[in-house]
Length: 330
Ligand SMILES: [Zn+2]
Image (cartoon, rainbow, N blue to C red; front, side):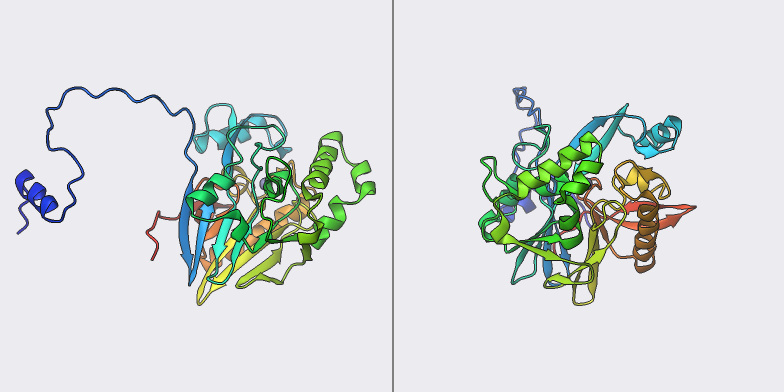
């Protein structure tokens, strides 16, 4: 029978050398610590077969509610979905989660966050990738391959340092060929609204000077050992997702297929404002989520809440995301 008394616990701790607290419970009042006033940078390790992967939180945007985020969906329905997810009142919550994959032979980074200056809005709550890599013990110079899922600024601005140098100077930077052809085309830029013209310009600025590192890829290719690209168009023409496989283990990584899950995974038929071909985006989203639900494979979402891993289940006409348990690395 186990009989735990305070004395036996303390004696056991002392015997194993793990006394980490003072037994003096009557010590005088503690001084208050100053509030940190900012969130910690998150890293979370998970295994895929022999691969050790790390989910890195680049930070989170709180975006005040605006109309039209889901095209044609009433404000009441959108606000109800936000409230069901316990968002702070009147705000969307947008996390950004690049993924680092250590295959044993290669270090691969999928997407790069907003960059050290905090993206186009210089938001101090994002741009934490470099700090996250440091917490993970990874020197950016050691990264072999950077894979960009699609050419939207929250995925590529981290390619540059604050002084506009290559953030990953020894890496091959892989960009979807369809994306490159679209976003580097002046005629396409001329046709879009001013806000989206700004996105074209951010792409040109972030990729400038990186030509020697740049290569293109298509869907259905092994873009790095054990990592296969999956063409998932709709959000953008060349938007890519990934299957990461080692041994019999497989994880699906998607960037903007659902955007924030509380809205577009729950309601897969809602058309995201930023989906360039919204009808195709809905079809792609359902196809991918059906595959994930059937496989019961862990799904990583760039815009899921950290650590950005969960399991997709069918739920009525939509899906629900069951967060994966926080696990030790095995
Ligand atoms: Zn995104």
